[in-house]
Length: 133
Ligand code: C2G
Image (cartoon, rainbow, N blue to C red; front, side, top):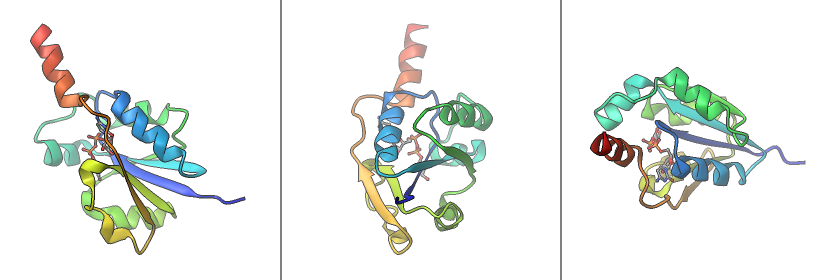
C-alpha cells in the first residue's frame, strides 16, 4: 500500500473550475493531497492586489473540498523545498503556467505540470462581474 503524498500551491481566490480541476487531477496522482494556500501578503506580491477572500476564508474553502486532505498557509514562494520536506511530498503538481519554474525541487520529489483550464481566471471573473455591476 503506497502512501503517496501530492503537494500543490495556489491562491485559490474566488474558487472556480480551473482551480477545482487542477486539485482533482493532483489528488488522482497520489493517496493524499496537501495544499499550500498563499498568504494574503504573498498574494499581494504575486498579483499586485489583495485577494477577494482572506487567507482564512480561502483555506476554509479549499479545505472543504473532498479531494483535499490538508491545507496550510504558503508564506513565500521561496519555501517550496521546506514545505515539500515538511509534508514528505512525493510529487509537486502545478498548472503549466508554472512550467519549468519548480524543476529545482526535482531532487526532492517528482514535478508535474498540468494543462491549465482555458478561459477562466479569477481576474477575468472580477472584471466580468464589475462590468455587469
Ligand atoms: N489554474 C488552472 N486553470 C486556471 C486557473 C488556475 O489550472 N484557469 C491552476 C494554476 O495553474 C495553479 C492553481 O490553479 O496551479 C492555482 O492557481 P492560482 O490560485 O492562480 O495560484 P497561483 O497564483 O498560480 O499561485 O507557489 C505557487 C503559487 O502559490 C501558485
